[in-house]
Image (cartoon, rainbow, N blue to C red; front, top):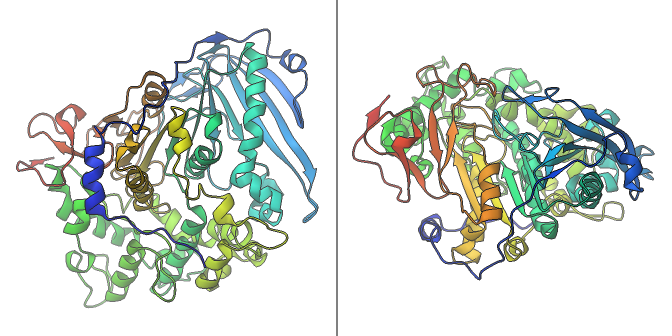
Length: 581
């Protein structure tokens, strides 16, 4: 039988976690010394000759990339060396395809002494440019800051048939965690050859599946890395994908169009209706943080204040965008409460109501992903045995899937697939104690309106750390919620922030992060414009992102648009004075 994560008492642990931000350490871990800069030795083109051979590795290119060839946030990236290659090439005995772990490593000419392993999103399958990009519209990144950065395809290519790689058991394991185990020593050996010494400090980071990669690396490869930056970590990705299919099946019951198409499934809960719900959430919750500004900072208080059935009008006639039918309300509220089995047992977490529930990215995850991405992932990569019909007719597979049976198959093994997806895709029950004992740090951020990986699930993961250590795990792990933000970026949110610099300062100087200032990406933002930023906001609005469970509250005076007039406070209680924007 699968085991499911149960929510720790929110009231008791929230109080414990509040005190924990200033609690003494469990035992003093070592303070890791800061990285020292270096310079690329020799030429990039001669680097393969200086390597002396890498085990099970073929270098396919080593070329100099001139300054300004790449840019980030409108700023040129300095000259660096790009090395490409592949590892562990083999022919699958199951599907007969050739597999390898493809990668690129970008090595700055002026190096800061650090290594950054970039975890990529989705089902991997592409060697994404190794920028070490951060946040919703990054103004900076690991490569720009002088890190040597590695990116990989995690052991397969999408050109081989997308999720069809899941038919090969080794490709499954590489995708889950083993590619990281192979790539890490190779990359460090490559860096040592390039700079005549290895990295002083090593970091791992990514968002979505990249965030999952990060927490899995923290559980399995803690000795290899010093800092972990996990964005929207789908650390229970198989369950999240199955829950999304479960949600699609519920939406299909109230769709007026063809639910086998994304557009038809979306008729169950249209953009106009999602805007109606978002406005109702804001009407109840916006002022709880002391300012009516289109953002809900106090997420927990909002869940108590907002009730979908009471606060959104119920249709007495035809749906016209000004109401939801009783059947719609039952479906939507059920999805927000979390996916359940046929007997009512919850197998994935709840989602909070938030001002970002009408963000432009919501529809992709709610109505498109279950019919294509999640069908292939659950059907072919995660289930034992895999279902090849998910490759040929994803929508029908998802809408006809027996959820209870599939849930058991996420935990199953057989003689071919000897490790279940809930083993190879997750950090399991790790308490991340090895990260703590060696002086490492974990920084996690998550959008409150993320529709695919629940911020409630990430909060439960963090509460578990606090509970197991009597509240003292904030000495090495912190969580930041981003109100309004969708999946990794977007939504009506201040979604642009530098989390990497605070993590480095924490790891290498012992400066624990407190509030981190984030900015909206309105018109003119060099990191890219977020179309979900309301026109009423200042284009460069800033807000403090607070370490959980603290909440940002307006101080009562000063420009509401500026982070300086907000502060992180521990108590979940509305301010007496309310400013309106």
